[in-house]
Image 1 (cartoon, rainbow, N blue to C red):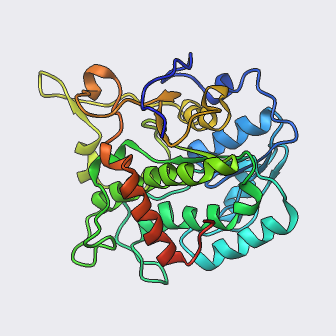
Image 2: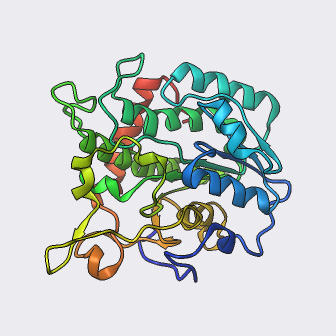
Length: 319
């Protein structure tokens, strides 16, 4: 893993995906973006397509995806439900039948703080969708990724809420939607850490990132009692709304991770605001304007443990 320290990208919290990609030509390149028809995913797809990439945009809701992506050139839509391992296997097989090389894979789709749910396998829904679905997809697509691809895992500052709950990852003994979300976002980071460690000898580099706070449909499950988790309070005690990014700015760190020459020889990093994030220790988000990354999310031993556990669950591994 490369050192968690900013590299001086020249971009920042307000940069947009289009600005990050200015001067970059992706003609002839193939990208795959999960969740690419809503929120920041839609802006990621639009930005990549606008600089010449052909983009695979798998979707659980095909009608919604077709309407949202209509008019964006070079986009191909097919069915994929990340919470269904059978669907992941079918989609990956279809892609490998017709594609030899995937240059960029951005795992953007996810659910947040949803009511308790289980997959057909009995797995907790947030961990199953946000992590295990992407884990299986990347491993099944490995023949098309090895040889120079970048894999980008969209995590969140939500990883601060919980590390891996090895004693009860499926919340059998009591569900907490925010701890479940936090665990899944930590898993997103750990996945990138181990994928990079194992994949770099094959030319594959991986990163995880926090896109920023953005008002998107990801928050559709939030309830009134969740408001305190996003509000700040001033000295007078009055609530102050946090600074939300536009979807275009929210997409910027993902496309920077996928394309920046500054990351050509770096991997296994956690990014935010279009640069490498600092460790969270000692950071004050209100004062420093950044949240940073927890040590447990970058722990190589923890990342390897998650990888082995995920292989046991999904039955799939590229290594």
